[in-house]
Structure formats: structure tokens, C-alpha cells
Length: 294
Image (cartoon, rainbow, N blue to C red; front, side, top):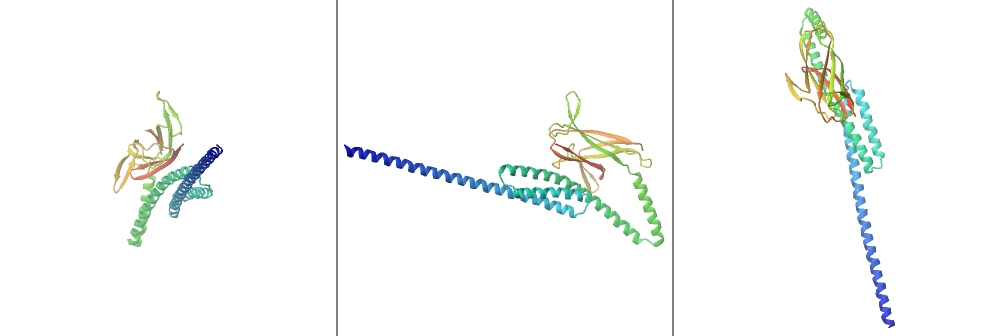
């Protein structure tokens, strides 16, 4: 009888020890899996941080190249580059958790959108400078090939022609863009919140000019959103070897007096960010402005 009780007790102890052993094996296996998962997450976050840092470096390099062009926009480009450099410094010091990385990634996207808009303006300035340089070179060739007496006459005639041409050009003033929400009643509620806007009202003034040529004038209005898309009709037309994609045209009957021009551009799903409004007289940029939707 005592041997039977002893054997039973021994079996119970063996069973308890076996259960404890199995529990320990399961706990160790669980800890190993959790450690592997944590290592994978840390590696993924590190990779994403490096990716965002690389994207910011590319932004900085783009600004450095644009600043080296030494255009009239250098101060604005330098200011935006400093924002990129500051964000890189913040990212370098950050803990690198998923939440903060998401914030830095969004800030990068905002800076990239701003850069795209600025680069478009830089390209416009570069093209204008190329035209000016070409004109200057042509003038030098004419002057160098002329005789001394004709040099004086040609120079005087050119200056007079330029003065008349410059004076006869129409000046566009007070380019403004207002953004509205349209009620079903037709009432216009001004707002700068992108999700509410469904109409842009673009207005400008053509100044009085007594020596300008009167008659019908056509201006090409180009509205570029924060994602570098041309809004509106998106029609492309050519002027010689140059092409222009515009949002709409504005027909004006000019009679040498001041004319106020206003036109509406309706749409949906306007993006948050900075928009650029450019007005062209054929291929010549004659006025520009910008506005921001939040």
C-alpha cells in the first residue's frame, strides 16, 4: 500500500515538472518571436528614416543648383533651403519612432510642393534672361558691323524704337485671385479652405496708354496648383517655336483707357498649398501672382 502511494506521488511530481518544462519552452519561444518582431520594426523605421533623409538631401541639392543660377529669386530660394536644412537637423536628432517619422515625411512633402512651384518660376526667369541675352548679342553685332557715322544713327534709332515699343506696351496691374464657396442660392462665400473652394475669381487692370495700339486683345491665363497641374481648360497653343498650356483666355476690347478685367474659374477638389497665376500676352509673361489654400 505504501509503495503504491509513493509511486502515485512520484508520477504527480514528474507530471508537474513536465508541465513546468513545457511552459518554460513556450515562454522562451514567445520571447524569441517578440524580439524578432521588435528587431524587424526597428530596422524598418531606420530604413524609412534614411529614405526621408535622402529625399531631403535631394531637395537641398536642387535648391543649391537653383541658387547658383543667381536669379532675382535667390533670397527666396535660400530661405526655403534653410527650412530643408533645419528639418534635416531635426530628423537627425529624432528618436526615429514611427509617429515622428510620419510627421517629418509630411513636412518633406510640403517642402517638395513648395520647391516645385519655385522651380517653375526659376525656369520662367531663366527663359526671360536667355531672351534678353540674345537681344543684347544681336545689338552688339549690328553696332560692330556699322560705320562710325551709321553707328550713331543706328544707335539713336534703336533707342528711339525701344522707347516707343516699351511705352506702347500695355501694363497689367493689381492681379488678384479670390477664392469662393458657391451656395445653391448663387451667393458667393469667400474662403481660403481648400475643401470648400469651388470657384476662383481672377481680376486685373489694364492701365491707360494713349500710344498703345487699340483693339481686341487676348490674354492667356495660366493657373498652376500646388501639385504643378494646370487647372481649367488645359489647352496648349503654339507661338512660333514656343508652346503654352493655359487655363482660359480673357478677351478684352482695349480703347486706350483703363479696363478692369475679371473672370471666374470653377472647379472641385482643390489641393492644399500655394497656387501660381500667370498672365501671358501670346508667349510673353506680363503678370504673375500667387495665393495659398489651407
